[in-house]
Length: 315
Ligand SMILES: Cc1cc2nc3c(=O)[nH]c(=O)nc-3n(C[C@H](O)[C@H](O)[C@H](O)COP(=O)(O)OP(=O)(O)OC[C@H]3O[C@@H](n4cnc5c(N)ncnc54)[C@H](O)[C@@H]3O)c2cc1C
Image (cartoon, rainbow, N blue to C red; front, side):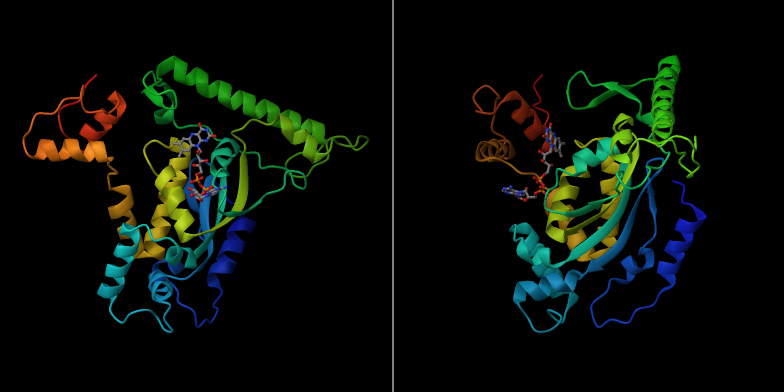
């Protein structure tokens, strides 16, 4: 991740400002406010603003006049209860705003999360950065044979070098043509004074999807946790997962009690169907169970066995 000296100065200026407020703040999050946390080769996540903390959730759940309850342990008990029982609106009382720089193909997955407010860098107005995402060698995997939506074994040796070369050459070539069509270099130099360049809104269409875009992304804590549940999960594509993991870390600094409850009751929890529950009850009692009369599909059965680390996996 490279920031220009001007961008670094802007962040330093923001970090040195001191504002007085009567509102609650999160000391740990304040420490990293505005900082560009690196993700992938040129991307980042920055927390640029937030509202509320753990006590705001308690306060709204109780519709209280003050800070919520007096004791942290009581707040913790209530937040755990709310998380366990899928109460939603108290978590909507906290808001957070991120500035994110990410490859366009990841932005397409991200934008499916409709419950956020988004403002994206305008490639009609400005020239896109001359930066492309190139996977690290340890992320260069073959298509999975068992999961159409996943990655399999690592590609290595000459094949890996060739793939990386293609990715780099294609991105560079289309960017060079982008500048040619614009009749303007990334740094603002005009290529041919006698020509007028193609409109930015048109010239961009030829760029590769690993080009980086940027946006401000604001959401409430409830929808952020939904995003993180789906995107920090092992089923999510690595390139969006690393953003989600960085953001999960900011949630820990912002609302530590909610973060712990989220890990416990959502991320680490197992959702079991009624048929699945019956099978687990039988296994715990030492009774014999079998897949054939379980009423579960092969996939469901294997997921259930894996979740509770039972050996009765079928292939
Ligand atoms: C591993 C993975 C694989 C995926 N694969 C595909 C794929 O192959 N193709 C594809 O198209 N998408 C795919 N998606 C995207 C997925 O289907 C969702 O669109 C995306 O994750 C956004 O989730 P969301 O709707 O919960 O989020 P948000 O849009 O933020 O919504 C949050 C919640 O608000 C509620 N909500 C929001 N809008 C409405 C509405 N209009 N009506 C009712 N309730 C609403 C819902 O409860 C929703 O869960 C994939 C996602 C993941 C994580």
